[in-house]
Image (cartoon, rainbow, N blue to C red):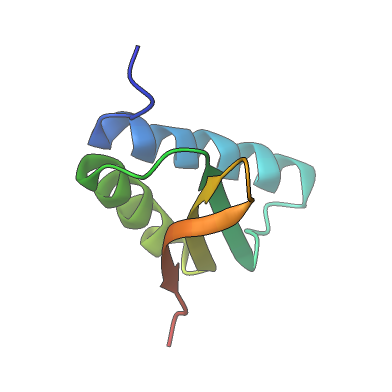
Length: 81
C-alpha cells in the first residue's frame, strides 16, 4: 500500500472534510486549513490538495513531518490575497 493519494482522491478528501466542517459551522468555511502527514507529499497529492484548497479561499499549509523528531521535512503554504 502506498502512502500517497492520486490527484482526484486528494481533492475528494478535501471536499468531503470541508463539507463536514461547513455542516457543523453554519455553512461557513474554515479560515485556515493544515494538512499534515508523516511522509512527503507526492506531486499528484500536492496538486489535488492545493487545487481543492485554493477553491475554498482559505489560508492553508501542507506539512510533511518526521515522527521521530516531529520536524518538518517539506511544506507548502498559501495565503490568499
